[in-house]
Image (tube, rainbow, N blue to C red; front, side):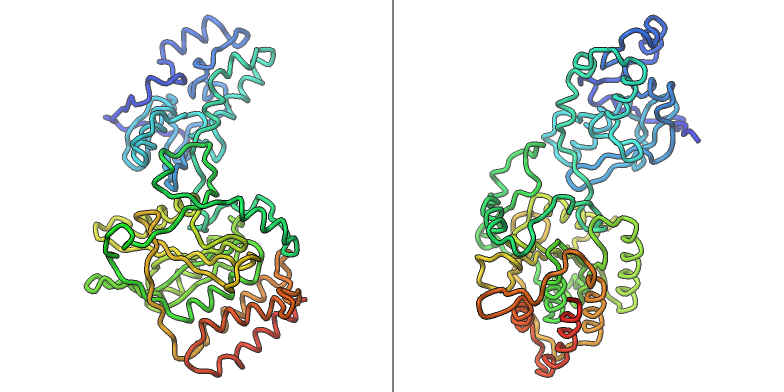
Length: 448
């Protein structure tokens, strides 16, 4: 069903100076009456009203969206071809006006919205529907003239939602080298040279979202860290184990407590996401299970983690966008501050690193500052953690990217030996943990 605008909507004219500005209703009618489908419509003449009239799109609630720098904006397509922003009820005359308005909220330096390439109708960019119209009704037209200027739109810097399945995104489409292809692994990681965040300037489409960003301590900029962080050894052990099981990136959530009086964030439990990053169908069930586990244990969501299997524990620009999205979600409608902790487990299978695992932590804002963390040694390995480890083994048992544990990591040790050595760095006080984990290691051996 179509959506009607409210009785007294606020109409926003932002973006009216752009090349792809919508025609007025009278101009649209005059143009269509004088030319018909057989005559050439200019790029500017193909509007949302044209697409609606010819049935390529239909009006509806919540079917338009913009993804930009970790933020998502949702809009309604109205019967008259205008757009209503769901969050505020504002009415926009064109995709450009809406895109420009939304993007300037996130990035005040943004000059244009590139609306047809930024706004999506039911998940597809509007510019694709414009192209479909041209192929259908004007197949003999000179496409270079009709689509003049749209190349710029296609290069816009809109970005998909964050990488986790708060957290679901198709980040693993790009194929990665196999574990045994050591020379290729080393070469690719050398090419990813970290940069300082302050040198990036305004983000644009030419900037690789996988660009790594250097981390600095608060003390490096003469600032005190505004809060303290304590992470239990069982959290580190479970994250380390999860990240070592596969050559692909993994993600998970962090549960704990935030004390506003002492400004202390305590991370007490890790909740691995037993799903593939691109599996949008399974993600809701996994998230729901984690939410129930948090509630049952009286914990709050305090952050997330992910791995860089073959790279350093430094955030990419895409990671920073995801961290921003998580921080905003965690903040909700509250005016009070609560930090969102982001942990990166890196250099897991990076040959030139001697340490078995490196961990970097970062909190937004700002995007390039590492947080100093206190690691608290637990008394013993809990049943919860042990059960979670067994569930992870079963989940990855038949995965094509499961690590080959019997493969030699170095002349004197296997990959499984490497994992054991890494986990020993997060050992609880009770030394019986080694015998308990031996059952887990036997399960790992049984996968191959």
